[in-house]
Length: 173
Image (tube, rainbow, N blue to C red; front, top):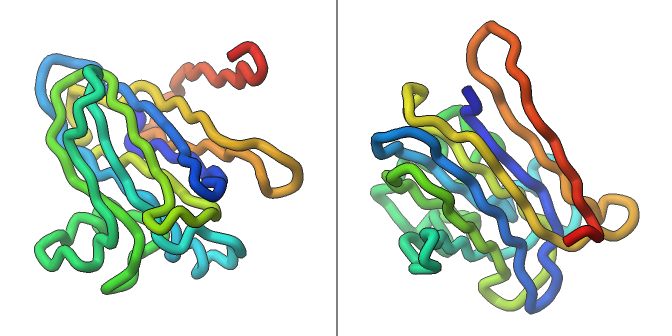
């Protein structure tokens, strides 16, 4: 099963990075969604987004979750659970939200709370490794030269091989 989905992208000034993920199955699932900006500084990535804002929408485009400055939410320990990396410092400007979601596709939009620009790492963590399961991540973001690329990652749990499909349609969109 996919237990972590992630995408690093560049948020341009006044713009956003958009991703979608899908939960497959019959029951609700608890997920942790994080937008790391300042935490990327600990990984020596220059030019991170200083103040990311994270918004989650359901298939009807209704906003069902939002966060800016997770560190101001005292009762939110999950942001550093699930072996989440990079670790968010207390009081950081990184964004995170924990939601229990029914199966379906959800959109996540990350932008600069202050209209700024920089790199973000969007992460979706499966907090329950039983079914239903995470099955897909799509990301739309700015792609330029050098480190101005979209980098996608995932973690597969278990010991047996899995078939996966990776696509990069590019200009076909």
